[in-house]
Length: 516
Ligand code: NAP
Image (spheres, rainbow, N blue to C red):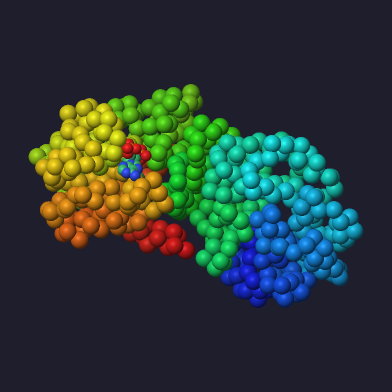
C-alpha cells in the first residue's frame, strides 16, 4: 500500500520538528528538505533521523528542479556526505532514503549510502512538462539493486497526466514514485496506489510558507478526508470532473459520508482541460461514478451510452455511472434546485411567479426545465444570446442578453432571480467583474438565489441582501443534488441521521477544510 510522506520545508530544524510532531500521526515517513533550511541549520542535519523518530528522506533539491538550493554541486555533495556520515549501527538513526538525481554522479557517496542501508531514490524532475523521451529516460534510470525510480513532472494538461500514467505502467521497477505536479495532477497524489507509486508527498499546508511542490495536498486532508492509507486496489473510485474545480464541496461531502458508512470508496477531484483525455484515465482507474461540473455538463453527452429522460430533454448531464454497455447519464441538478427553492419560499409550485435566470449553461438548462415543470414563467439572460434563445424557446420563455434591454425585461420578471453563471465564484477568472449584472438595481422585493456557494455570499448575493431581498446561496442545492448522486452511485440512500449530521455541520466543516 502507498505511504504518506510529509515534506518538511521549514527554515530551521526546530521548526521542522514542531511541524512533524504536530502532524506525525498522519504520515508514514518524512522528507527533510535541506535546501529549505537556513545555511547555518544545514550543519545539524545528521541528527535529524534520530530526532524525527520515523523514516526520513534526505533531499537537497536544486533550484533548477524546483527546490531552493542555489549553491554549487561541490557544496551540495558535501552536505549530502554530512547527512550520510557516521552511520549508526541502529539504522533508525540514519537517513532511511536519500534522493539523488539521475545526473548525480558521485559513486563513493552512492556506495556509502548502499553500505549503510540508506536506499537511493533516483529522481528526475521536469518543470517544463513531460519529456519526449520519458520511456528511454526511465529505462536509463533503472540501475537495478535496491534503487527506487522517481519521476516528478509539472503537468500542463490532462494529456500530460495520461503520458505520465502510461510511463508508470510501463516501468517494471518494484518500487517507484510517479508524480504529476501542479493543478491537473492532483489526483495522481491521491490515487498514488493506482499510479503505481509507493508513496505520495504532502505538506502541512496551514503551517508552511512553502509546500514541498506545486499541487501537494494537506497531510491531514489526505489522511482524514481521503483516507489515503486505506485506498487499495479494491477501493471504488468516484470523483468530480470540471475546471477549475478549486472550490467544490463534493469531495468533502462524499468522502465524509463514505467514511461514516464504512464504504470502501474514495471521491477525488479530477480537474481536466480535456474531457476526452480524462475518460481515458477514468477507464484505467475503473471509475464507478462521476459528478460533472463547469464547464462539461454538455460536453459529456457524447460519452454517454444511455441517459435518463431528464438528461435527454434538458441536454445537460451532471451525474455519470457505468453500466455494462457504457456510461449512463443522469441529472440531479433539476431536483436539487427545485427542492431547495421550494423549501426556501415555502411553496409547492411556481405558478403565477415571474422569474429571471442569469446564464444559459449546463445548470441553467436544469433550472429552466424545473421552472417550466412547476408552472413558472421566465426570461433567460445570457452573454451569448443565442444560447439563451435555444433554451427559452423550448419552454416558451423570453430571452435576452446581459444588457439594457435584458434589464428592462428582467424588471418585469423579478419575483425570483436565479443567478446560474459562475461569475463571482471563487477561482473563476473569466470575467472583468465578479457580478454578472451590475446594471440591475434590486428593489428589495425579489427572492434571489445564487447557485454559487463559494464564497457563501457572492458579490451579486451581497448586493441583493443589502437591498433587502430574501437570499439563498447554492449550498443547500448542492447537498440535495449530491444526495441524489450518492443513490445513483451506490444504489442506496444516505441514512437520514448521516444527512442531518452533514447538513448541520457542513458549512462550518467545509469552510474549515477550505481555509485550513
Ligand atoms: P457552464 O455550463 O459553464 O455555463 C456557464 C454560463 O455562465 C454560461 O451561460 C456562460 O455564458 C455564463 N458565463 C460564464 N462566464 C461569464 C462571464 N464572464 N460573464 C457573463 N456570463 C458568463 O456552467 P454551469 O455548469 O451551468 O454552472 C454555472 C454556475 O452554477 C457555476 O458557478 C456552478 O458552480 C454553479 N452550480 C451550482 C450548483 C449547486 O448545486 N449549487 C449546481 C450546478 C452549478 P456564455 O454562454 O456566454 O459562455
